[in-house]
Image 1 (cartoon, helix red, strand yellow):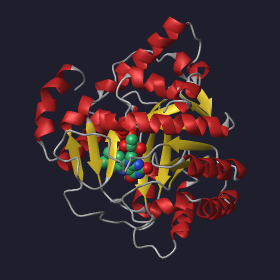
Image 2 (cartoon, helix red, strand yellow):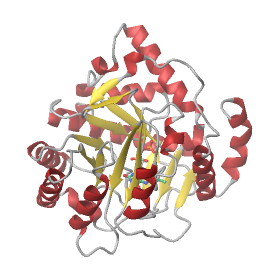
Image 3 (cartoon, protein in one colour):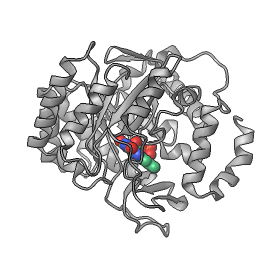
Length: 356
Ligand SMILES: Cc1cc2nc3c(=O)[nH]c(=O)nc-3n(C[C@H](O)[C@H](O)[C@H](O)COP(=O)(O)O)c2cc1C
């Protein structure tokens, strides 16, 4: 179902209610209906980080496979890694529908899903039963009605630490009221301290990454970088969706929730470059927000990302986008005569930081 058949199916999928379209996509990945064309991977795209060997730097962002139903199917598209979740300790229904809006004219999505997910136990059972290789990170969060949110992250780390390639600590979803306050210095310090205690008790240490919002000012960002560096956090994921509204043309522009896709690119890339400057290469960054081509993936890498992730553009462009981005990145390496993608990371970060 690669290539031409997706072109036939896409107009039909685009007519479906967005959540129904998403369910269908997860099912087709689960059943292995969509696969990357066979071809040998480009070894120059491989990168080793956090003690993990990524076959290429392009991953699936959190939220696409919240319940770890299809990580193998997503990897079969040619992605270098998959981040499942966000998972909360207890299952939760999320916000009332409609809560997912496709802004076709803007190549964007607004969502206020609110961490709908099957909960730790069910997702853990799926991951534990999974066969097959490939890097699968787990993104963890807190239940909306939790009395102790930090404790929810501790539970997530304790549950998934032994099976996850890495853990992403999501303190940046705009759809759980108050959650983003965990990005404030004192809250984040407390959270990181508790997570480190828990991590020390795991059978093997698991890489711990923090996922941040694109809506932070420089001081807030500087505090996060400091806390992450001091607390031994292994990497920072920049960024989640934005609550800001750059100019949009779609009739859904006024819906509440987080905006992703093309209109997020500029803001999330600037936040990425700022973070790159603050951490000074001491820990790697994952760049996410508005990647929809090899060009935009390359810009993220050169703005400071060692790895990149995408979600929204896949919903618009279909699975063939993965191969097209990877091929485009290989072409870039040819043109610049580089022997590995790592050589490009951060090479243009300063230009983004000094921009107004
Ligand atoms: C429908 C939807 C659900 C999402 N759910 C989550 C989530 O559960 N946890 C999370 O950390 N990010 C979530 N995200 C954010 C994405 O992981 C990503 O950070 C953001 O969409 C920007 O990337 P993109 O422009 O390529 O989509 C979600 C995004 C969308 C569109």
